[in-house]
Image (cartoon, rainbow, N blue to C red):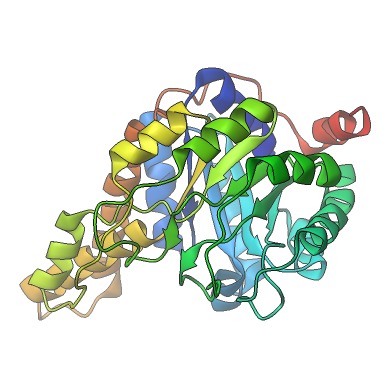
Length: 332
């Protein structure tokens, strides 16, 4: 199946009241593991690529790989999404490469730390929407800031989303999806104790903006079995704590439709490889140990697709193209 616009995937998730995981991709093994899980569970899926991933892999190579592998899964809706795009130039670049969705993170200044003013965030985000929508590309914006550090994203202060500001922000920018700050954080070391998120914000924004799809960033659960596996085989991941799956499921029930997860995949991949090295110190064939990482990604993503309610929804609709979405945006 050709890549589909992310907006369509999220529209179907809203109809079915489930969440769709957005999984970060840096290499072939991650990509294969994620799509194996999508095929097995019959789930739509969002593949996310960050700026640093584009730099790591060689952007043309990574996108070509996504397109080739995605075409093998004719019955799975797949969106290719830019995660935390920082400027219009990067957005233009990835759209030219074939991305069907982009996030513009206008919540932070160019230093990646200082929160932008509301008006500046609107200006930056609107500029991207005005460029992307005529091309049929979905746009995600962000209002508020998260804590933690991941791929260079590290706000100097945490600012929760104000529902009244969210309504004005969407009206002025025209975004399809909105990342809201409700107390989550990037990275593995999110919390020192069981978190209490501001889920009332998600509920209020969803009530006010039922046609805009809410996104929860920093949603890795940091499962302790994955942490323990890493540490059992020489790792040092100490006192890591994430968002419990029950809290994510509650957020989905209140209207969150896109759930961003990266750290958990890193943990699963790393733990499997560390274990394999420990048990097979004589092996130096990278296909052997990277294959174990791929299997771990498959197992982990499969569990998330079941937990989020995504499983079984791949056949709910006929996929749209970017040409279809151009007509949609021109008629709005």
